[in-house]
Image (cartoon, rainbow, N blue to C red):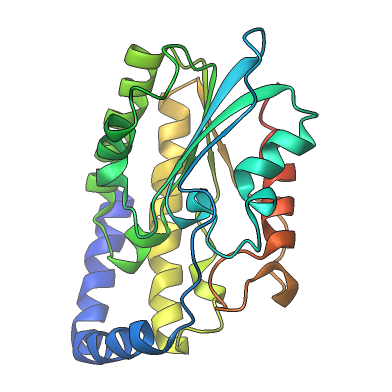
Length: 237
């Protein structure tokens, strides 16, 4: 209930700034460096005796910002784990929580029937679109239940929402509101983690620095993906 009230006051504060946000957002989309995805669909490992990991989500799953496929989040999970898992990666730049089910459905023939672990990289675009917290939570619940019922997923890891409030390419006032909304959606993830014992919300503790960001000032660099993978693997046993 507190989160819903906080969201209401956020919208009240946002209202006078909407024309400014629209103008700045349009200009930002025109001027920002466009980096190509490196891992929209990626499979690593074909050992029938190894456990399967599904990585699915937004631009960080798609590998935007990585210099090569080997430096993406999925590849770093594979290499840092010592090739201990088969990795099945699905990523889409700009993805929101509401499209997770569709992304999985489009690749269902290529994804194994049984997945032991799922890593969901989501939330940044829901911050940019100011998705209502109740809707965000409901969409993730639906997807978690789908993974458990259809893919027999034993453990679901949702890492931190990208630190949108610190992206240097975005104007300060917009970053302020993005930070407020990120905190709202983060509370939803914490609450979900309490409702689903199989879910682990891994709220990264490392501080953002310039060397962790790609040239667009938004997506992770190679080093950023390496650190993300290292932190995420702490949740996989």
